[in-house]
Structures are given as C-alpha cells and as structure tokens.
Image 1 (cartoon, helix red, strand yellow):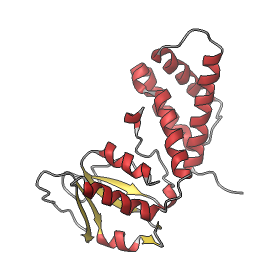
Image 2 (cartoon, one colour; image 1 turned 60 degrees about the vertical axis):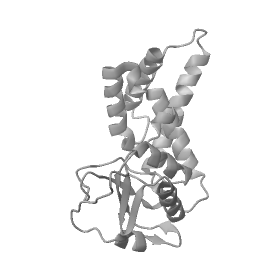
Image 3 (cartoon, rainbow, N blue to C red; image 1 turned 30 degrees about the horizontal axis):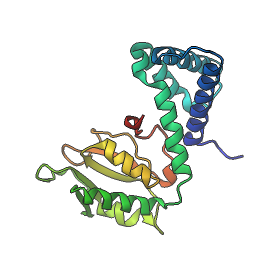
Image 4 (cartoon, rainbow, N blue to C red; image 1 turned 120 degrees about the vertical axis):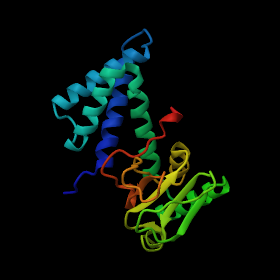
Length: 214
C-alpha cells in the first residue's frame, strides 16, 4: 500500500474544492460576489474538516484557511488559492524537466536579470554578503555539488534569497521546481530568507504559491 504524500492530499483537496464551487455556481443563476464565494468555500472547508473528508495531512491547512476566511472574508482568496494550488502542483507533476536541471536553469535566469548568484562557497556559519544592493541567491557549494545527482535533486538544498520571491517562485515553476515558504529565522546569510528545495518536490507543507498570477 502506497502512503499518500502531502502533495497528493493537497491536490485532491484543491480539485474537490474547485469542483464544489463550480457545481454550486452552475445551480445558481445569479453571479456570486467574491465575498459569497469565500463564504461558500469556508463552509465547505468547515464541513470537510468536521467529517474528515480529506487526509489528516490537510488538517492544519484547512484550519488556517478557515480562520483566514472568517477574519478576512474575500481577502483570504480561497478560490484563487485552490486554483493556484491545482495549477501549480499539476504543472510540476507533468514537468519533463529534471529538478537539478530546473534549478540550474533557474539560476541562469536570475543571473540574466542581474541577480548575484553564488554556488561556489561553502556556507556552514552565519555570513554577510555584499551584493551592492542587487538581489541575491546563495547556495552552499557542498549542497550544490553533492545534492544533485544525474541532474536530479537527491537531498534537500537550502537557497538563501534576498529579492523578489514572487519572481523566483514563477521562474522555478516554469522549470518544474517548487520552493518551500521563506524562513528568515533559519537563514545563515544576513538579510536573506531560507527557501528549501526537496527531492521530487515532495514538501511536507504548502510550497511558495504564485498567488499574484491569480
């Protein structure tokens, strides 16, 4: 028996939520407002959580989204979030680009946009990088050289980033790569956040979403 991954559970939830709101919309002649859509999805999530419709891997995400919808209404962007998740995770699932190759293409793309990209220095203590005000992305040489085998990421790789994370997420997605959410506390580079890449994109929590495209 194959254990369901977080990605599979998340995609199942997102597709079900989209189907639920589309089915509901087809049964109502009047066009729903964003607030009404948010209210519908919030109720749907509450019911799904109560009945344990989805994997327990989804419990924390559902709880967080319900809380956001209750406090922010349409500002929680539930419909956009589910659509973004479905599109992003399916795109990565269908990508023919090896993750190691995708990472290298990402770095090339950022360098072309005048980012400072560093992969030839071992990072094992807190450092300060002088990038003359430019955006920067640093990967420890040890991880870059040892955690990619046959063009595939085989062990987690930490990227220390200072710059537009939305741009990085979009370029990474084009290369079939998902980034973790940024974490400033774990960064070894001053003024940078840590973003982690995982083998086969099998993160255990929600990746950095390209919500600005929705």
